[in-house]
Length: 106
Image (cartoon, rainbow, N blue to C red; front, side, top):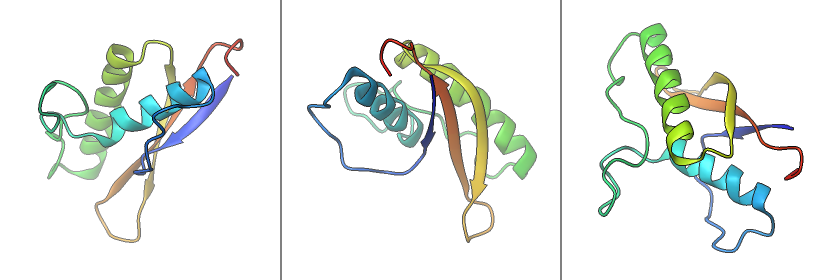
């Protein structure tokens, strides 16, 4: 089954009710965490190297980074699509990540 995860900070559930909820929460955590910001795991999250690039370049770089990091940190989810929603402010990208998880987990 496919699910869309939007890059918005949400309260962390330390005891998710299902494995599916855990996977989706992990994906959201990966795409909302800047790399080098986690003290004991500086490699976790997405790099911000795309900042200040033209919008099409930034979208391409962020898309590649999201796919790579989700494959690395949450192998139970497979990215099938990354789109972006623009916020009310110009230049702010909000990734919408569509992931596929095993039908057994849904």
